[in-house]
Amino acid sequence: MNNKKTLKKTLNIIVPFLLGGTILWWMYRDTNFSDMEEIVLHQMNWGWMLFSLVFGVTAQLFRGIRWKQTLAPLGEHPRTADCIHAVFISYASSLIIPRSGELSRCGILAKYDKTPFLKALGTVVTERIIDSLLLLAITAIVMMTQLAVFHSFFNNTGTSVNDILRGFTTTGYLVTALCLIITLLFIWLAMKRFSFMQKIHTMIANIKEGALSLKGVENKGLFAFYTVAIWASYFLHYWMTFRCFSFMEGLGFTAAIVSFIVGSISVIVPTPNGAGPWHFAVKTILILYGLADTEAVTFVLIVHTIQTALVPVLGIFSLIALGMRSAVNPKTSTH
Image 1 (cartoon, rainbow, N blue to C red):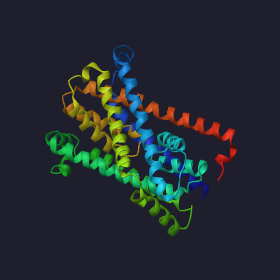
Image 2 (image 1 turned 60 degrees about the vertical axis):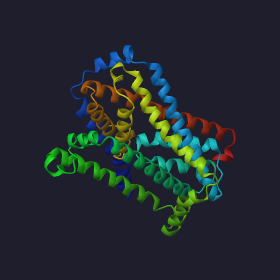
Image 3 (image 1 turned 30 degrees about the vertical axis):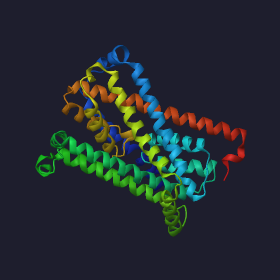
Image 4 (image 1 turned 180 degrees about the horizontal axis):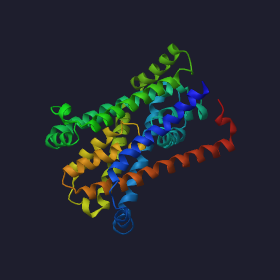
């Protein structure tokens, strides 16, 4: 039994890295990295890059504050700082084990604020539903205004509805099947983790209570504001990086929003912070908007690497902050 658990945990970590690493290797196998080094050290505008990181922080801040708001109708009132720290840590943990962040942030509140784990998990379900609906709405609007670009994207990536069966190579089928299997595997493993916590009917009841917490949110207008602020921050976190590179000057808002949407959808594939699928999807869209291939792959690698580096920094900061609080007041870290 222990061997099976160890194997599952090992696969949980290795497979996403292997998938993302394989895609990255394929994309950058012929790249001259000395040229990228020259861009980073001498050509890139670091002022705009650092400014973009501000919005990476605000996105997580707003998410933490919004989460506290959804917990209030359940009679749970964790510290705002703890909600934010939990979100910071959740993103960092997902770099190691994709999709583990939802569990880790609920565990943080259970440890430091005695918030029932499953109720907190239910509110996370609510968040994901709301965010998915907003992303779908934005995607629908963007697609209606940019149908020609999306049509080209689907054709170029072998996902055209009309040509999907004919256009897929053997490699295309294998990669698509592998991504689907890995995604389903992670969903299954996540569900398996819950089985030991409580009896199934109690678990479902608690999750349902948390998921329905939005009905009792006192200020729904404020909730809507936080939701829009989260996604506006995500977009600005990405869009500001366009100003870092001279070769991006010809691309405007439309290219930014379309590539942002496609990139956001691509991270459904469980790799660390979307590494691999995000690079490929965003690169493809930028090329369709006229960017040269070498410039596109340079942009996505530099931006993703720098912005991903922010995630563990925030996670470590929160772990230290919570650890210092526990050292001062040990009772806050007990159930």
